[in-house]
Picture 1: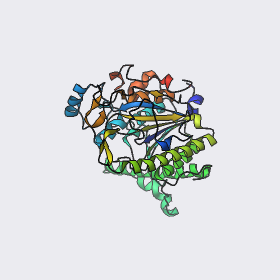
Picture 2: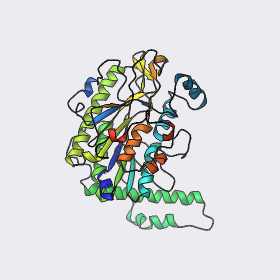
Picture 3: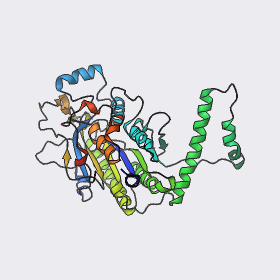
Length: 382
């Protein structure tokens, strides 16, 4: 793939939230807040019954997995597994997006990765390669250094004595890099009008985050970026109580925030160059937990973008929710599609070759084609 072609595919956007639950019906349906004209256009598809897996799993193997390898149904462990996609620690302390950025960087492309509101292991690459930037929910912090301080700041932190410790040197280097990078990002954003957008975004956590992602994408040329990767986190989907009222409000926010983001990308003529994948650490149980739902495993998720082959469901949607081969107590589903399936497709869309795919997804070899998704079924023009 040529540099120009790759540069046109400039942003992979990682939205972390549970969005769609299983619906036991002959017709696949969306929540009414997502059945409006925007969400019924063919700009997205769903991948069914997806989750973090070490290998294709049966009910019998499930109990061995729980006892021997991880704590299922816990937010921290399942988030870690979902964002890393490396169950056997082949490439320790790295995430799936960070490894993508590493591979692209070695190919000579200028890459950048940003976490909105909180850091994420998903963006971590190998030490010394990619360096993700964490940005607060209100955007970049303003750093003001008195002119006299600014003149000696880097000199002060570059000074090294014979007895200087490695930790002090590392801390000084990180501080200087953080300050200088923040100043450069401010300059890049100001060069494209700061926080101004052509579309009004909802004044919500997700809306504000997507607005900031839009401005960062708009500054790509000023930053010299070929590929950007973003991670946005949506809150309050752990609906153990008041599920219906919470979900109605949350889905309305997601729908309007994504609508604004898509419209903004289209106004910049960049929608065909952006892919959004929505994920969660797990789905929800089918049986109620009082007025809410409990932690599940497999869930249904969405991928959208201008180059996406929309209007379809990929993966295997369960046919038996009572005593099926993948049905566990409380209506929890063993995933039939591993997270490696959609992320392999995104990696190929970004221009990563098959020879590098096992670095992006180290556990890809554990799944045959029946559990994966052909990237050509996900994207146009591969």
